[in-house]
Length: 401
Image (cartoon, rainbow, N blue to C red; front, side, top):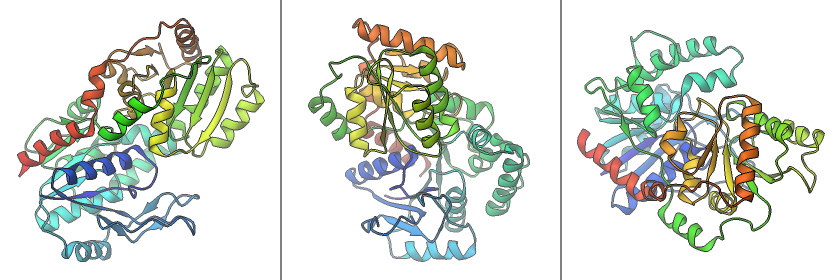
């Protein structure tokens, strides 16, 4: 089987969807299938060019962020022809798997329509919440985005909220998948389902089997020192890094805190830590590790005593806490949608306030110090392995074929 995946961003760029697509590609190839990934070409600085990979179709693009990490490929006739030419010499395509929400999704749906191919669309993004958290005029942005989408994929479906936007993709898809039960439920409640079927398939994003085994067996769990907390992710408003730091300043738990990742709020976060004395060697001590390779990030999670998850309403899965549970590390969970699906091994934050998060951090650090922290469910590790996730996706492919 030849599966062509479409992404909004190159899979070697930062992001949970990109990590998931790389894993899916590897495990589909292990199962004997052919995978091509179509995404905007990257524009990294000189000296950091990517090694050519035959599975990648790097579509002509323009950089859209100052650090040149992310790019945009314009969905129009010239780009369509470029993609058709790039795929012409490859095996015949069986399934188009769209794992994007914007220009990558437009290009994927246009490609499938031109070649009369079935589409699986994985919904990675809660579009309305994400735009509300990052855009100064979210309603205007959604209206403009919806108009762009209708022109790009030829839709007559009305509506300009986030659900209508996702619905236009779903009604053109043979199957829709979501990475969590809570997001699948929301999609179904808002009619974001395939036209012929009113259900959404739940398939978690997974973790590399070999890497999971390597980290669990070769990396010592816990630091053996005072409690160590880890926060990781993109430093942007919807991830709520700043409220986390405010909660630390409020609660002052006696713990080492490691911040992993990068993004637009890095400097503001560093200034806050310095201004509030959170960088001292005693008390609450916060350090910034920067962006780390995925394997090293998992090792840091495994060595930590707890992972802190702070976004609310934005995550369609919440990869970090599932990665933590797979590695035996409990989590402080702010999002009430994520908590039930994660199961055991967590401290729940009562509400979205800084004070509630701070109090939960105090309790977590106290439990860790007393060796009474909750223990994650071992079943999560088995269900989170990429091999099991790929088997589930292959069943979807077979069904639509």
